[in-house]
Length: 489
Image (tube, rainbow, N blue to C red; front, top):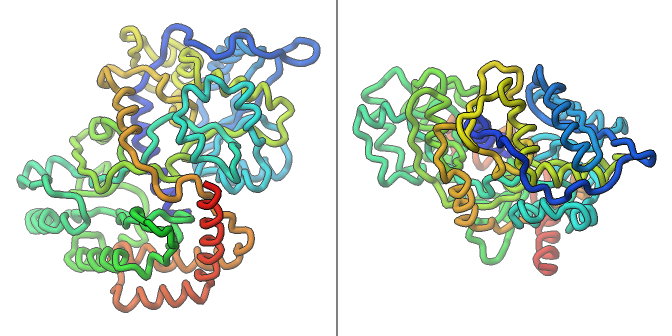
């Protein structure tokens, strides 16, 4: 779970910067259903309650008035948005869900208000029939791999955001030091390939740690449960689940990180360090992030100094990337059909989509040209666009390339599927063992992956503790389910 949150947060940081580089459309889009459905039995519009994640905005109610005016005309429904801050969202939504408090739509993902877990618990409405009846616009807009890869037990329980489909890890470099020391990035890819660059940096900038934080080094596995060390190799042919701590790849990674740690390339407290202060100070050479098209430009604009990146692996579609941003309908919703009509409109109507993301022209943004806008700083409305539906409907910021969304499409088409895409492990038979294995993983993982401990001494202890915690039982259950899933495919 911790790893999944870090990875998703890496993508989210790119997308939140990207949100500032997108715009509002001035005219109506092409809603898939003009005036579909009715409201209450007396013809009055229903009110949909929508929970979403992010810092609450001063002008949210004002924007929702404009949204509701539009949606009343289109689908005879009003919308009331309730925002919960990032750090509180998962916990508060769990309380709301368990208490039975009524709501209609909620943000869910692999990293906040856990999608798979809550779908299995019955918190979300199974929406296959709703998608067929009211989701024509969604089916046309959303890449098929999003809908297929986010199924739980063969069914859809949320609408994924149409955005970048794959994940691609990159080494992200502070260009001022690359230029200052004429560092050659042409052959950079593996963890080991960083060594000459780190050495040069340390020799010339002794007061700067070249790797400023835990980079969560890449190992070529598709994990059954993110953050817990068991899965299959990305190039697997036999789909055999292995304990990743026991693999040569993991040992090599941990030994390389130990070498870098001892050389002083990482801070002494890197295993416990939190936050990304280096992004503000600019005192660093390389870290790891996940990219999207034009991410270097977005990072450079956000940090106020130049960033360049080099890919670690090809674009890969993982379960966690497919479920990184979704909207579910509550199993207790009194208006599931109307909720789906709204989600369909939100994902197919450019005017509505941009209104929700960027607010009111003249108040929250100014129009630069057709399809290009500039946000007004401190306007009272600044939303994380990647949480709010089909991103390909968003228009551009002045510095955005004209072919921005075409490049996203190209990026999506370039991806390969991870071997476990679409497989969702049901851990109900091994919950106690999985919890114990997770605890052991959290005990050792950061220390090993930051080089803070000696792998030859600590890795065998970690493996023994994982076995004592029951990892083999968990793996056996996962293997049985994986084999059955593959047989059905």
